Image (cartoon, rainbow, N blue to C red; front, side, top):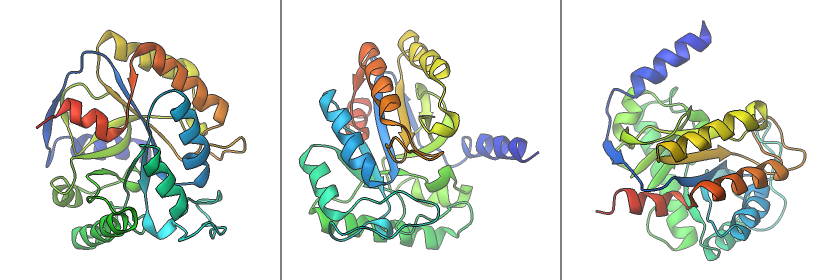
Length: 254
């Protein structure tokens, strides 16, 4: 019953407060994204993508970031050490894409629109000051959750908003409800992923992929390095790896 309710809720979210965009690339675009962000995603995940000639996108929750290279406190839901400010600056220098979660990693299905907008603005301001950049324009919903009234407020705050709903973005899509493929170990399935990647070749679209830590001891929401490397190589055979910002500039150049 819970799964059915979740499917119904997600179906409703795709039909309300939308921001339509046409996604019709000539070849598949693949964007690897990392949520929260565990330090291994920045260091090892970044190395894997850089070696492949690609850039990753990191959706950062500022409250989880350590100000320096000292060990970070561990959250019960995030048992792996989290990224620190020097790591974020290194990602920036490496031409990776540093973007937004909420500041406090809020579940946006269970908070008010006013609280959500304020928390997001705090995160954007902090990232902009810390990295000396323009405010972040791309967002991932923490836990993949959002209520219709929060979506309504956030859809015009960011250029894209990513969910954790499985799928490829192509044709007429909602930029405030972009689908993605999970690389998390809890449901990592090479055959299912290959089928999706081949589908993206048959009918080109924008494929976002997401995970958290990149570690041999990855938990259910992270990915083993060998698995990430394998997916990266399979994507290179089929299209181009680019950050969310790079892909969006191609999809919606105005």
